[in-house]
Length: 72
Image 1: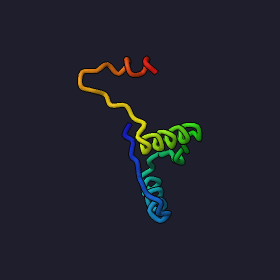
Image 2: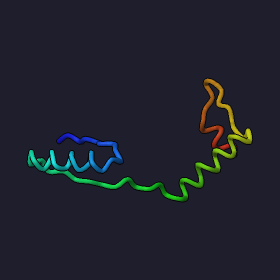
Image 3: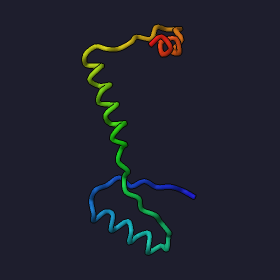
Image 4: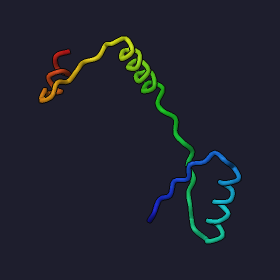
């Protein structure tokens, strides 16, 4: 099986692609884009605020990332 992603908002293009697939008797599925979990979006926005405020940690070469996490 091969998966094709068609990235368009143009209804005419979608209609043409559907007609082409139907014409060739190719079965296909359609799925709407899923929205992100609001909790996740809030977490990303908070992280962006923290970065702009300079609240970051620099990981030095050779440092263990787990040491940074466990020290909080």
